[in-house]
Image (cartoon, rainbow, N blue to C red; front, top):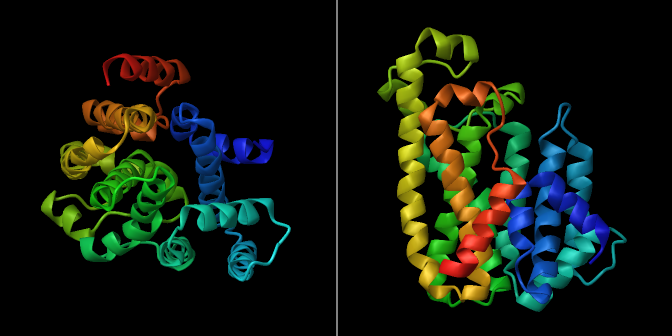
Length: 273
């Protein structure tokens, strides 16, 4: 496997990266190419200043690749090979790129309905692509989308402080009103600690509900594929628990499982799955 795919994937998500190492080689290569593509696009919009020109160039090169053109961009050409081999729907990629483009222009979401559209493109379609790469039955697709959504939502909660730096808020305004809470800025959260805790726990409750729905689809996943997926899933639940125990930790550090924790969880799942 090309070391560029390894580097991009590893820099983006250690949880996904180390969990994915336990897929069979022919699957692992395609997973690395998929996540290199989505991570590269995401990195263009998650910087200050945002790399708008680079994002649109990337998007245009991807469009050219759809016509069978070799773009010379290893990430795009590698992903295009996966699209063809695994029969990924171009509409899924369009939705993904649409959500990434939204990050260039949209900084907050008024309603859960508008956020759900973003979540579909940024996470649910990745679940669908993974389901196709793993050759799962269509009956699993709903759960695959739900798992992507749940994991992305934990990222939103974990990255509240980082997203503030980027000028973004991924939580519907209604939730602020319900929790009698006005702002996620650290100084405001500390002035209203009870409101902040209620707010974070409300978001975590949503994650757990989506996660439970997602896990209903694990029955469709063969054991050799379920081990890394279950491991990543459990690491996100661990992240949610740590934040739930002390919501203010998000202002102190980025909550992520250690590499030894991931590896130990893989071993446990290998034995007991």
